[in-house]
Every structure is written in C-alpha cells, then in structure tokens.
Length: 280
Image (tube, rainbow, N blue to C red; front, side, top):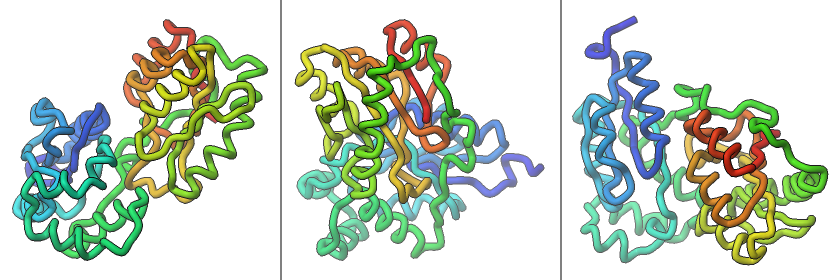
C-alpha cells in the first residue's frame, strides 16, 4: 500500500452533521489523504483536525471549489453532510454570498430545469465532471455505515406499529420515486406528515404537533432509483432526539440503503427513550 503522502488524495465536499467526520476518519484509516472543503454556515471547522487539507467555500463558490480540488490534485470527490434545500433554492442566498462567475453561469444555465434533489445534485456532479473530477459514493469507502437488517433496539415494534410500517412503506417509496422526500409519519394507518423541502427533522416535529404526542411511526427509505453518490437516507442521534421530542415511538429504515451514524450511541439513546429501531 502506498503511503498517504504519495497516494492520490480524495476530495470531501462537507456540509452539516457527523457524516463528513465518518468519511474523513475512514479515509485516514485507509491511508488516503483527504482534501476537505467545508460549506460555510453548514460544515464544522473541527473537521480540519481529521483531514490533510481544509478550506472553506460558500454556497456561491462553485468555481473556487473546483479550483481548489484541481490545485490540490483531487480528481475524485465525495459529498457528505446535510445542506438545507431552502438555502439552495433561494436565489437571494446565492446572490448574498457574492457568487463567483462559474456559479452564476451554472445558476442561469439550469434555470429551465426542475429543482428536485436528483436534478439539482446531478447538475452539480456534471459541472465537476467537466473538469475531470468525478463524484464517488461515500458508501463505497464506508460500507460499514449502511445499516444491517433486523431489529436494532431492545424493544421491537408492536403489532399495531408493524401494521403502520407496512402501511407507510410503499407510500414512502412512492414519495421517493417522485423525488419529493424519503420519509412519512404514520399513526393508526393514517399518514400524518410527508417529508418535503423542510427535511426529515422538521417533518417529524410537524407530525408530533398533529398527533399531540400520542405516538407515531417514522418510515424513512431510499428512493427506488437511489443514486448512492448523494442524498442517501441518513439517521443518527439527532433523528432519535427529534422523534423523542415529537412523541414518536418507532423508526423504520431500509437495510443496506440507509446510513446509520454513531450506531452504538444511536441505539443506546433509542433504548433509553423506548424508541424501536427496525431495518427492513
């Protein structure tokens, strides 16, 4: 194996959450140098302690990001972390960050295309590919983050909760097929909330406000056409905290298609709150 100083570096386009840290730590274990570019306002500056090189960029800094990757020898990169889609779709967000010329061209060239997650992110990947920088899936580097099948917590779903999981699963798949969202919240075989642009956490809280804390099931699945390079369903301690706060009782996720961050801590927290986690 080559040393980390001679191996080709991998780029990491980092946003909010623990996922970028997990990718950086795994790359370090494998001896792969990492050039991380953090999205200002989303990524954590602590990431610099886990990578070989760290730089900041902004929402409107696509040209800077591409230049930094090229200057540091990056020819392949991964995306990890959450970006608030409302920020991406808001033109004032882009303009207020003083976008560079490449970002402006990108924005206006795709104005006639829709802004669904897949369309938007594939457009970004295409822009990087024009410069010979290919996007790869973080799950190729970290397959151990994909959740295994089975009941992960001490408590499993009750028969009624099992019925709600089965009821909501195909609906969640259909929402994914339409590229609307990946999660639905169900109680007594009625859909309480569907994730859309607000994201899973806010959809969970909305379901809690509608159920008035009387318990519900969260179903989060991969899209039928899931591109594992981006937007892979991801859960962790934050998800469990949101479910607990909203009064939810079960988290049902898709095995081998969902990233479970900080698995030990997440399961321990769910056990403490009496929340069942099941991967199907």
